[in-house]
Length: 117
Image (cartoon, rainbow, N blue to C red):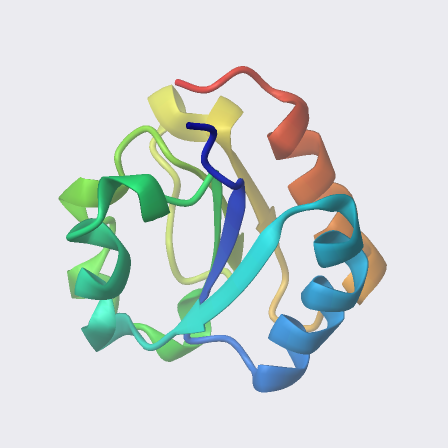
């Protein structure tokens, strides 16, 4: 059984989810948005683990990141409050808090093309 690829938006704007759905769902990817406190929605279900996490760092307390269950998952971090460890830099893209959706889509596309960790 093949699992669907997923992009998970954490604490982002609902607009971000909608834009990503319009771009990626026609390509066969599922886009889901959750709040930081509700990670169990996907961590309890291994078939729901996303290929890319889009994390709005401006809305998430730095003390909660990075979550251990996110190790090895490619991610886009929006906002400059979180420093990406050097050993994870290949699996992570950062964007400024004021970003363009084209930049976000490009970052996700780039990460999706990389082999899984």
